Length: 115
Length: 115
Image 1 (cartoon, chains in turn yellow, red):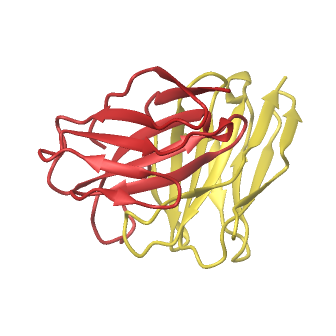
Image 2 (cartoon, chains in turn brown, purple):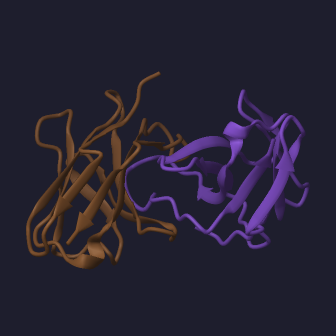
């Protein structure tokens, strides 16, 4: 069964550094998402992406965050200047997009540790 | 997404059925009821969804009350692998033209399976 894959599985970075988290969504999917989960807390929506542009973003997704689909297969999340509070699991998801109820398929996440 | 209420945790024995309740008294006529689960150290995983009629798939069954103000996810024969956090989420059914469609996760129900 096709999967959403995320790399790296664990990223350690120093505060103030830029990080790029990478995702390969399922190949025929049209909608792409990033979520995050701080340890012990809820899964939080960050951003959705469709037709090469952001369709929705949450309050968390401020100017430090950006997303890109650079080559038709990868979907990336960039954090320009990381803060300690950015430490979390980051999940990428995709869905087919025929109807809004098409299920989201999630990757197993990248654990970001900011020191 | 309209609000749902779930118990914080439930415990069951292996190989017995599990009934996970969800209350959604403010559900609107266009809201679908979705269930996702999150196994330890993994991303969320789609389980099932429905509108009015009960639904079955290979993972679970979804029983929806006649007034749609509550629903129950049924795992017919729980295994240790079913230990996870289960999320009940309401989603509006509409044609996917981009726009607001990020899932809103609550705290879910932490299902503990005893061997």
